[in-house]
Image (cartoon, rainbow, N blue to C red; front, side):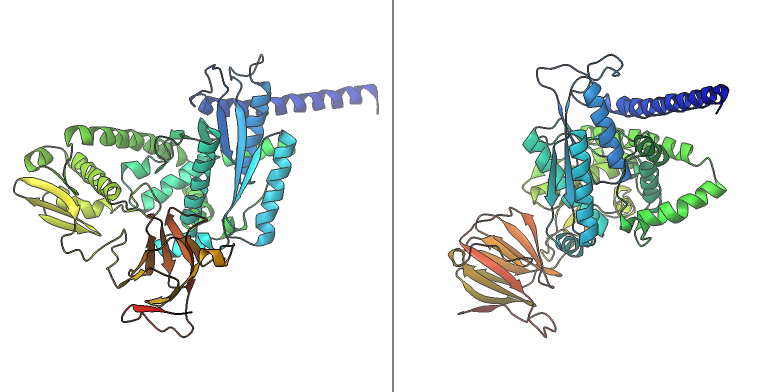
Length: 495
C-alpha cells in the first residue's frame, strides 16, 4: 500500500472515530438534558444523590445504565456537562414469566454488565406463578401485573437505599406507543398526557422518590446505535414478538402502517401528549380548589349549586377525585394501582351532566338529592371490593384443622410443625382468621390485618401485610372433582 493510500485510510478511521465520539456525546447530552431536572442532580450537596436504575437487560435499560455510568465517571470534570457526582445503583427484577433459560440468561447478562461498569446491582426474584396468579385474580393482563410487582420492588429498594429518583428507560418510541394505546382506549387528558419525564410513582406516597425517564427524548434507533458503537450486547425479550399484547400489536402492525401512510404522525401526536398533560395538570389542581369535598363518616358531599356552577370537565375530574378518596377511606385499590377502581369517563358523564340523579359504580354510588352531590358506599351492601364482587359465605378459623369454603379446602397447621413456608399455595398467618368467599376468589384475613386472596385454582396472592411468621401456616388446596361452589361453609374437622 502506497503512502497516499495509508494516509487516506488513517484519515478515514480518524473521521469515523470522531463521528462516533460526537454521536456518543449527542446521546449522553440528550440524556443529561432530561436528567438535569432530577432532584439533586444539578445541585451540589454534602452527600451525592443516589439514583436507582431499573435494569432489565434489554437494549433501552442497558444503554441508559451504560451512559449513566459514563456520566458518573466523568462528573465534576471539565466537559462533564455540569453534572455533579452521584451514586448509581441498579435493580433487576426477574418476573419468572418466561422460560427459565431466558429469565436467568437475563440475570447473567446484567450481572456481567454491572461488574464491567462498576455499578452495584441487586436482583429481585418474583415467585414463579405469582404474576400470572395476580393477573387472573385482578382481571388484568400479564404486562400490567408484572409492572405491579416491578414497581413494588423498585419502591422498596429506593426507600432502602435513600434514592433521589427511580430511573426507567422509556424512550420516545415507548411514549408514542403509550399515546396510541390511550387514543384507542378513549382515554381522557390524564391518559393522553401520560409518561412525563418526571412523575410521582402512583401509590408510592411521599416516601417514594419520583420516577425519571432519561431516554424520553431518545428514539429506539438511537439507543441501538449507541450500543453498537460501544460494543455492548443486550437481551431480547421473546414476548415482544407476541402480538396478543396490545403494545406489541401497535408496535408491529399499527406503527408500520402509520409510517407508510402518514409519515409525519409522530410530531402532532407528541404535541397532543404535551397539551393533554397540561390540561390534566390544570384539572387535577383546580378541581379540589373549586369543588372541595366535605366528609360525613364514609360519605363525601359537595353543594349541588357549586357542583353545577363548574365546567363539565371540572365536574368529571371532581367525581374521579371523590372516587379515589373513597378507595383510600375503604382501603381499596384506587386508580393509582393496576386494575384499581377507575370507571370510564363516558360512564361518569351522564351524572356529571345532570342527566342522571343516581349512578352506581361498582362498590360506590353517586347521588344528587337534597341540594347535595354525594359519593359513598352502596346502601344495599351487596357489593364489596373493587370489582363489585358479591358477598358470599364466610367462616371463622380459630384453630388448626381442615376448613371448606366454596371450591377451596383451607388446611391450617401450627407454625411450629414446619420451618418452611409451603410453596405456591402456602402462607403464614395468626389465629383467629376469617375466610370469606367473593365472586371469583376467597379472601383470608387474620387478626394482624394481613390479607390474602386465594383463587379457585389454589394460588395465593397477597394484598397487604405478607409475613414470614405467625401462629399458623395455611395451605390452600383445590379438591379433585370440585364441580362448583359449596352451598355452605363447613366447620373444621380434625386432622
